[in-house]
Image (cartoon, rainbow, N blue to C red; front, side):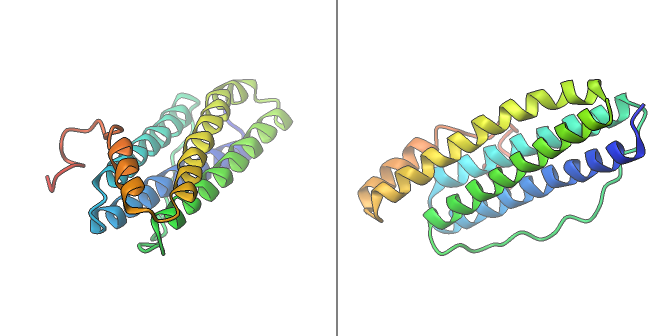
Length: 173
């Protein structure tokens, strides 16, 4: 059984994960508007991954006899000054999520809630991967210095990561 404090914190993280999906969908839309389909595809795949993270929290809360509490999701930004600025914002957001996951793990330890601490281990490791993958793209974008040919090549590379949901995310439905 989850303590009230742990339940509240897990619900907050569930909602952060939903916001993360919203943010990445907004970034996908931004890149679609720029006709950078590979960048957009990468962001849509990332949004889908964040929805999966939210679902993990949702299911865990219920597995522990808690009650999911969904809150309003804040509207994310819709414009960035450049592809680099968008990925820098994504990197900053992933760092924030890492901090939140670490705080959840600390709370679980304080509460002596070892099941939740074990559950969070996957997220701790996942965040290392999340930050590293976004940071690599930030570094590549910094290296391009707005060179259109290199940007085109990076767009092709990022397009290799596609959402898994059937064409709903790639086309209008």
